[in-house]
Amino acid sequence: MPISRRTLLKSSAIAAGAYGAGLALPAVRRALAGAPEDLVAYESSALLTGEAATGGMMSYGLGAAGEGAPPVLRMRKGEEFSARLVNRLNEPTTVHWHGLRIANAMDGVPEMTQPYVYPGDTFDYRFTPPDAGTFWYHPHCNTLTQMGRGLTGVIVVEDPADPVFDAEIVLNLRDFRLGGDGQFIAPFKPRDAARSGTFGTVRTTNWRAAPAYDAPAGGLVRVRIAATDVTRIYRLALAGGAGKVIALDGNPLQAPIPLDLQDVGPGQRLDFVLRMPDGEGEIATLTNVKGSTPWTIATFRAVGASAKRSLGDAGPLPANPIPVADLKAAEIIPMEFTATAEHGARESICGSLGYTFWAINRIAWPGDTADGVAPLAELKLGRSYVFRVANRTPHAHPVHLHGMSFHIVASNQPRLLGHATDTILLQPDETADLALVADNPGQWMLHCHIIEHQKTGMSSYVTVT
Image (cartoon, rainbow, N blue to C red; front, side, top):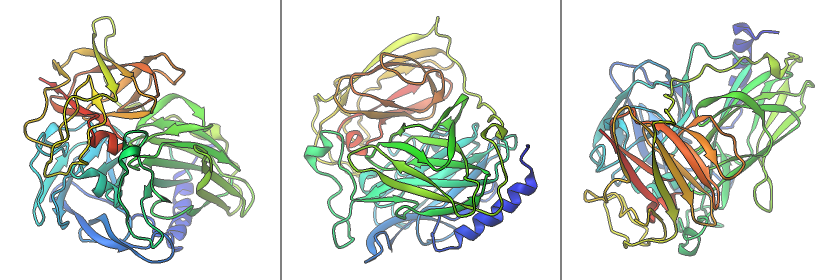
C-alpha cells in the first residue's frame, strides 16, 4: 500500500507530540539561501545525568545561543545553503560539514581551507549540497574538547524524490566523559589514546539516556543515525520490530540489508526503515551490543491503530551523483595506517594532546599548523585513483576523507562492497581498495575519526589540482 502525504502529515503530528514530551530533542529548522542565518557556537550547562547540571557544555544555536543539543540542520539537494558561524566560545573554532562534497573554501579546516574563527568573530559558509542523505557538522579546532563537550550536530539533506515515510526520527549518538558529580573529567588517558581510545562515561542519544519516541503503529519510520562520538564504535541490534538498512554514510544502498549487528564508527551514519509493531503501546528497541554490557540506544512506542505497512512498501532512495572510478585506468596509491611515528607532537592554536602515537605512511600529522607535512598524494582533477589502505594495527580506525566520496571495491576481510561512502571502518589487519575520481579541487584531509588517533598523528591530506 503506498504511503501518502496525508499519512506523513498525521505522523508528523504524532512526532510533534513526542517532541513536546520533555525529551529535549534538537530543534529542526532550515537555514535558507540569501542572508545567512546565524549558527552560534556557545558555552552553557545541560542536565545529562538527571542529577546536577553539567557545566562547560558547548553547543550550537540557530539565530541565538539556545538550550540543549545542537539543532538538526535541514538542507535540500541542489539548493544553496548559508550560515554565519558566530563564535561565542572562549577559544577559536570552525565548522566542518562532514560528508558534504562542497567547495574546499567551505570545508572548515583551519590553516588549510580557512582562517581560525576567533572568539567574537564570524565566518560565512555558503554552499550547495550535491547529495541527499544524513550528514553531520562539527568543529575542526581543538576537536577533542569541543566535540567532547557537545559540538556535534546532524545534517539532513532532503531530496523531493525520496519516498515518503510515516515518520522520521533523527538520532545523534555520543558519549560524555563525566565524573560522579556530573562534571567533565580529563578527556583522554594516554594509555587508552595509544589503543582504541578513551571512552565516555555517560552514553546519550540526543543528549538523553535511552530516550523514547512515539511512532505510528504498523507504520514505516525512517531512522537517521549519526555516530558523532569521539571514540565509540557501535554495533546496532533491533528487537521488537523489523528493520532494513537503506543508506550508509549518506548514500543509498543499491540493495537494502537487514539491520542485523551493523557496526557504525565515529563519523559514520546509517539510515534504516523501522517497521513499527502493530499493537498500541508495543515497543521496538534499538540496542548497542558491542562490548561486554549491551545498553538501550532508544525505544520506539507504537501509537494509534495499525497502519499495516510492509517493509516492501518503502521505495528505493534515489542515487547520489557520485562519480565512478575507471579501475582499469586508476593509479594505485598505497596508504599504511600504523602505530609508528617519526615526529613529536607540536603545540598549535587548535590544541595538542602532547603525544604522538599514530601515523600514516610512517609520518605523524604535526597538528593544525601552517607548516604541515607534505600531502599523501597529489591527484589530478578528473582522474581515477585507488587508495590501497592497510591497517597495520590491532585496532579499528574509521578513516574519513573530506570533500570527496569513494567506493569500497575490494577487501581482504568480509564486508559490503560497491557502495559510495566518505568513511571506512578499517578493521584490524584489513587491506581495502577505495576507488574514487578526483573531482573536487583543493586540499582535503584524510584522517582517523577516533579523535585521539587523529590528534596524535593519524591524519594527513591529499591535494587535487
